[in-house]
Image (cartoon, rainbow, N blue to C red; front, side):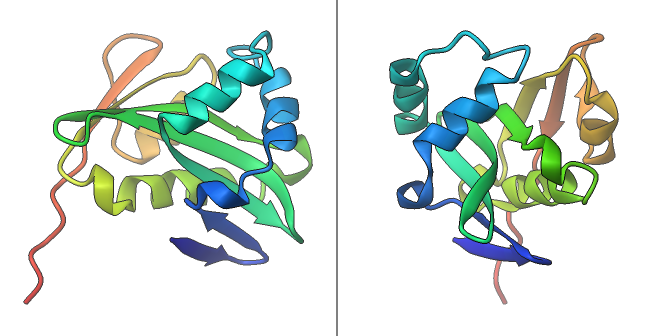
Length: 142
């Protein structure tokens, strides 16, 4: 699926992912800076992935690891520094939590510096770093 967010596009289409850009973005993070390309590619292969794009360039990334039945782990949420502060992080998390395959599941994540963002979306702290949220089931169509 694809969603327009102002001048940006958020997509869950893995064919659109720009692996070089994802590697560059993750290299700047405290949690994935030492991952090699092979590991990143394997993690993408086994996850639901979300890309954020502006003018054809990937400027954001996130992925969810899930069993599709009980839970998902939200991971690698990152935006290029050039686009931070534009609301794209909020839009990305919102779209992830609305994703059809994640409805009714328990979401988990860990963060050292974005507690406020995730609390805004109903993630409750388990401790200072780990958060949990129950995503309600998708309403039945009338």
